[in-house]
Image (cartoon, rainbow, N blue to C red; front, top):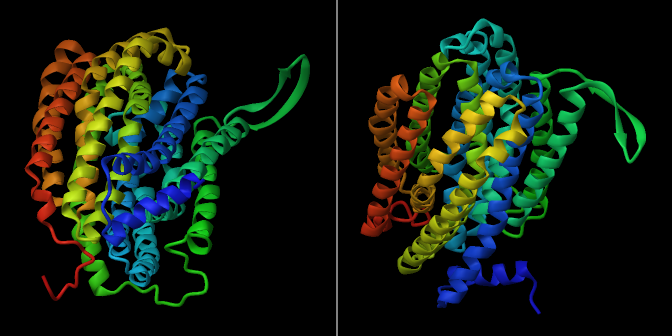
Length: 482
C-alpha cells in the first residue's frame, strides 16, 4: 500500500506528465497539499495566541504596545513574503515543465536576492523604530515597550526571510508536510522560549511538586525574542532539508551561481512588485485603521489586537488552501494544462469557502470563551467578543478572496488582483470605518471590515469565473517565443 507521500508524488507526476486525472484524484491531491499547509498556518496563529495570552497576563498596556506595532510588522513580513513569491512561482512552473535544473538555478539566485532585500528592510525598520509608536498615535506609556518589541523583530528579518524562502520553495515543489511539521515545532519552541523570557524566575506546582523555573523577566521584549529564536531554529532546519533532502530542489552535490541573473530577476520583479506594492498599501490601510482605533483608548487598542489574533484562526485554513492552490495552479500551467488548472481553482476556492464558513460559525459561538482565554481584563474581553461576532459573518467571502488570490499568484497574474485588493480596502473599508467609528466606536470599525471583506470576495469570485487569469503565459515557457 502506498504511503501518503508516495500517493502525493504520484498525483503530482500526473500533472507534470500530462496524464488524465479523475475528479477524485484532483480532490485527493488538493487535500494532501492543503491539510499540511493548513496545519502550518494554524501553528503560526497558535504562536500569536500564545504571545497574546502570555503578554495579556501582564495587563492591557503591555497588550496595547504589541497591538500598536503589529500592522507595521505585517508590512515588513509581507514584503519579505512577496520577494520570496517572485522566485517560488518560477520554481513551481519550471518543475511543472519538468525543468528541474533550471528550478534549482532560480533557487540559488533567490538566496542572494532576498537576503539583500531583507537587510535593506532591517536598516529602514531600525531607523524608524523609536518614533514609530508616536506616528501611529500611541501614548508615551506604551512607546518604550512597543519600540523594543518592533526592534527585535526587524533585527531578525534576514532569518525570517530565509524561513519564508525555504518554506515557499518546498511548497512550490509540492512538499507541504515538512514546512507544516516544522511550523508546529516552531509553535512548541515559542512556548518554551516565551515561558523563559517573558516572566521572572518563579516556582510552579506540578502534581504536588514545587519546581523552580528560571526566567529573564523581559516582558513584552521577551515575547518578541522568544518568537524570533523559535523562527531562527526552524529556518535553519527548513534550509537544511531544502538544500540536502528535497527530492526536487536538493542543491547538495550540484553546482551553480548564486548571483542573480537579469532574466530571473525580471520575472521575479514582475510577480513580486505588484504584490509588494499592494502589501505596502494594504498595510498602510491597516496602519490607518490603527490610527483610527488608537484615539478610542487603551481598551479599544487591546481588544482590537486580541480580536485580530483570534479571528486569524478562522482564516488560516484559507491561507493554507491558498498555498496549495498556488502550487497546483503553478505546476498545472507549467505543464501547459489550463483546463486542469481551472478545475483545481474551483475545487480549492469553493472548498475553502465551506471550511471558513464553518470556522466563522464556531467563532461566533465561542467568541466570549476565546477572549476570556486571551486576557483577564473584563472590558477588553467584552469588547473583543462583540467585534469577533461581527466579523464571523464575512468569513466565507473572505475565503473566496484569499484562495482566489492564491490561484492568481500561481498563474503569475498579480497586477490586477493587487489593484482589486487596494480598491476594496481603501475605497470601502477605510471610508466606512472613518464614518462609523465616531458613532459606534470599535464596533463601527469592524462593521466596516465585515462589509469590505464581503465586497472583496464578490469581485474576486467574479474574476475567477471569467478565467482571464488563465491567459497569462507560464514563466516556464521560453522567453523568446510565445
